[in-house]
Length: 480
Image 1: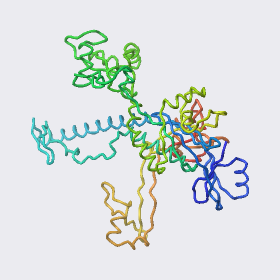
Image 2: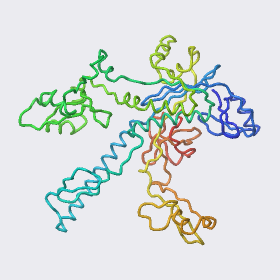
Image 3: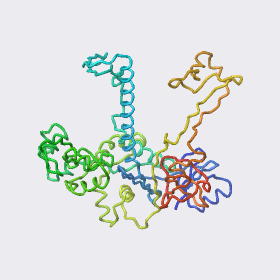
Image 4: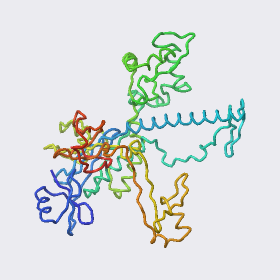
């Protein structure tokens, strides 16, 4: 085990042995910066002589492996569990609430139009900047907002989150170690070849759904417009069912679709037992999902470009088959941190190092916030401004407005009262908080009522009143 060292300016130095760190702390020449991994900061100047350190990265959709190694020894090894699936579910929940909210607003406008007598059967509307006419029924459509939408990221929220998570891991390691070179296992998957290993040449142009209009059309044609449960095909309304729910990671791949009549479809979604029965019976349709591989294909070019900018082109690439040969040659298991080790090492592993386990938590959960108390500015005990910039519906001037009206010198006369968030309970612990229970440091995984649950502890049986908060959720938390 090593102790990581920062100089008095916060820049990383080479790590030291625990004994040397204890002496520096005892003599008052250093202070503790963080406990996991244990890091100290010097209070005096040092030469700052460092060695060359390579950082190996094994990217992944659910887990990331990293290994930092000098010429002599392994300095840092870690595995990080991401929350990509949680991001997907949150986006689906947001879409569901947005649809419900729009429906309620539309119903409200229809009721008011009916009372006012302005309701109509059908009308055509032409919006400026939009070529096609819009057909509206009952009421005039709300103002179209699609014309002012602009997305500069060109990534889905899940892919963007995964890319930022990879960057944050590298930044976190760069703060405690003087990394000089990065070796990245470049992930590039041929999804068509994963489905059909014998595909080649023009075969890439002949996909499974070639000739079909869309996913639904292909599934209905493949199943010959027949319900696969009751075998009815006449005088029934047919629907396409996802064998694996989209909320569970299911996608619109042909193997995940199944034709059911309306009655059987309702029966399937009636309870979990029926859904599992359908999944067990029809889940053998080559039901493989390639969402993780697709996401990695999307983020790898951007992640590689960012690494080149961050480390001044000191980045080299390796590939999965090369690390696979090393693992077989050295008789090592298939683990994320071992793949990262294979990226930076040419010799086998003699002793298994201390592997730090990290878990990613959501930092900003608005469901826990009861109210947001705004920031206020006072002049002679009279409130003259609220917030730095105006918010929607704000009546009082913002600080920016006040400075525009009275000049920048008004800032010397103002007294500020900070804004804060009022949470739903008196003593609330969020997931990812580091707490002290008894004499042990624990990481909160959730709570129920007045009881907490900790990582690596099976039950929620730890009273909140006996727990003290040490550090709030930092996003990526060490769970060792």
